[in-house]
Image 1: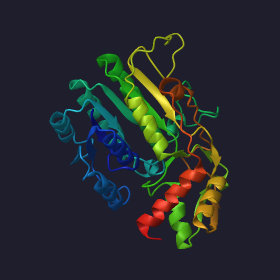
Image 2: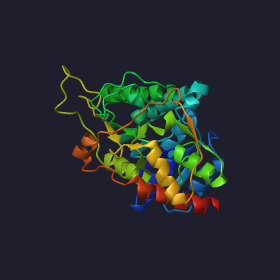
Image 3: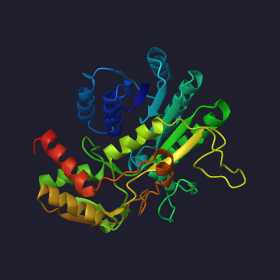
Image 4: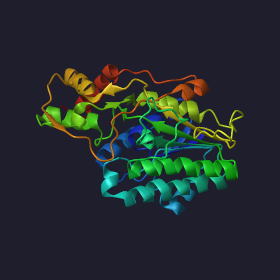
Length: 335
């Protein structure tokens, strides 16, 4: 297939692009290489893709509608995976406008481009953040997600609503994927594992929010990519079991689906730090702090819908995943 991957120089996007190319797909990567975090890391990911047969690249933003539509028209993708977005819960408290520009305006441009070019299937990144203030665990795709606690989460919830509208009005098949705390080699420097590793190796204290008592459904990047590919290959149709008298956010009478992709094994942050210490062979000096604004105490993915429809659920343990990250980090940074 010809697959357009936005955010191809990003953490998940670069891994996904490699997997698609390895199975023989053509991939057009689309990324603006912005400076939200070190562009050198993004360029290093991209440099691994550029020599591969079947890969081409456009540097531009989702908000640049003309550039996006030109990329669609030249490449003529059959399917699209939209991973480009302004990421980060905490940064959304400082710069909410960036989230509207990329995650709302940019996503609308994606939807319009797909609508007018007969795209077979749009798969897009949502987030576990949409569950917001929900307390019922595990989080299931059938649950209400009407109480986000950050602007980032609100824009991801908006993406799901916008996608449904286009699925309903224009019969555009869309699948939203709620990712749960992704980690692994080539990860994002603003995420906890990367921050902790850098500071522990430098002998600096690490900030441990909520005194380390919150839990996260840490999900290894290869498991995320497998879930993306399984759903990309499964074009949704109308859900024959959908009952408009008892609606669910997970499906519709339109060709629309939403899935959780998580490890469905929440781990306390303190345990995550212990595993990292074991892999590094060093103890962390911990600066214990209260829960940050915009964060939630716990995440835990119910992946039964993903398992039912794709026969897949993530399974990589944090012991395995953190070790692979540390091996990559030491090699990449020479530490």
